[in-house]
Length: 228
Picture 1 (cartoon, rainbow, N blue to C red):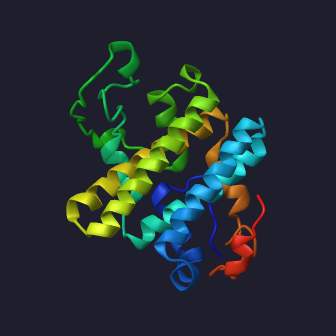
Picture 2 (cartoon, rainbow, N blue to C red):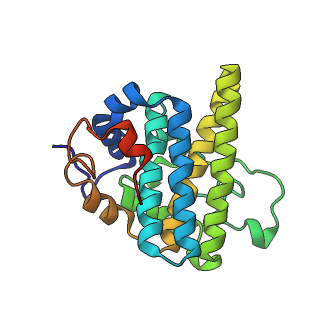
């Protein structure tokens, strides 16, 4: 039985997604389908923000994250490693903790210095790190949602360019944008005041959160018509 637990890491969550959804993804969903589902459920999450429906927002952002990790699995990208290298307990732009981009009007990306002793080990610790880096009190939930939408757009654009060129430099941009997406997802959950690991463990306590099988047995048509 595959499950998410309180001490699960981002890498283990990604491995869980592969174990449960890897086979049906390979059989039924190409990269465009999966990217569509990342954005489809993220936009439903945005609707939850607009309607002040915390449960709807949380559920859909979690589903979106599972499709996002499915893409990372197909690309063989270790998204935890990429996120840590992009955000080594400091802002990826101003290289400060907490972020001072607004206060100091930083106009040029600064070099980050990686200190492995500060590396978070679990999803909870990564969420806590992003709460320190980017205080949720410093912006509205709507602003956090808009920032996520912006980064999802940039991730989609990088995927479009990479899949058209199959160029190593474009692939590197995909990994950087992927890390930014993780950062913004964490930011949204922090602004929602949602403990992500508690929500994940509640849904994914027994394989797929819908059919409870591994591999997932939900059909393509079921997924296309899934209500959330």
